[in-house]
Amino acid sequence: MMRDDGLEGKVAVISGGGSGIGRALAVAYARAGAHSVVGYLPSDPHDATDTVRAVESAGGRCAAVPMDVRSFEDTEKLAQAALDEFGRLDISVAAAGILRRASLADMTDEAWDDMMAVDLSGVLRVFRSCSSRMTEGGAMVATSSIAGGVYGWEDHSHYAAAKSGLIGLCRSLAVELAPRKIRVNTVIPGLIESPQSLDSVNSLGREGLDAAGSIIPWGRVGHVDEAARTIRFLTSDDSAYVTGQQLIVDGGLTVRWPS
Image 1 (cartoon, rainbow, N blue to C red):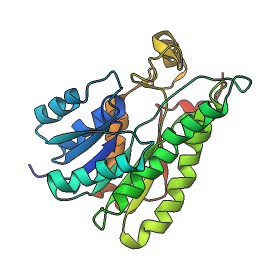
Image 2: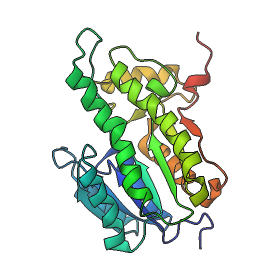
Image 3: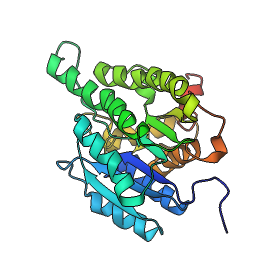
Image 4: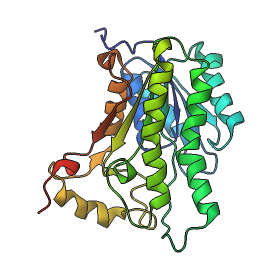
């Protein structure tokens, strides 16, 4: 049966597509009849060819491009790959990010600058490269976090600042790109089980995630495919009049009265 969400035949560029939400999103697009170009960091331990295989198993097509969002040359290469491989670019999702623990006392300029270069400026670079090649009526989504997007997080002020900054970036781009009918939104994932959150050094780890499930109204942390399907919605015709917004995906965590 033909879907009516307008994603059939569309092409999405996804940074951070080697694992986590980015990989799940590429598969979600394949199931909707869309194709994807995923950017991945070559030094990342997760294999982007696994993303390509998962997309193909779901009936889609996927190209994997080694790149680093710290480099404008690389984001240009990522965006151009969509035109070279599929002849069009309709959707851009900035899902690449890093997470590092550092207290204010231990925060170096280098640690701060590296976080901003990836988690904030990296999104700008991806969107700048993609928007110049995007068809009218396109859609862009940045992945923020409840850390910064809603809550503070001790020992993660640089991460929270970058994720908070994405909200202002996307609101402003939503206004700027509206004449081209390009929508720009932000998804704010809550506690999602992913390779990043399973890192017990810089994030919660397995034990922390399990404990967090008890304070979430839904009774568990989220899955990457649940965040991915939300992004798919924000880039489909089902959200055709939604732009400059932030959608929280957290199982009710941010609305629960403290007990």
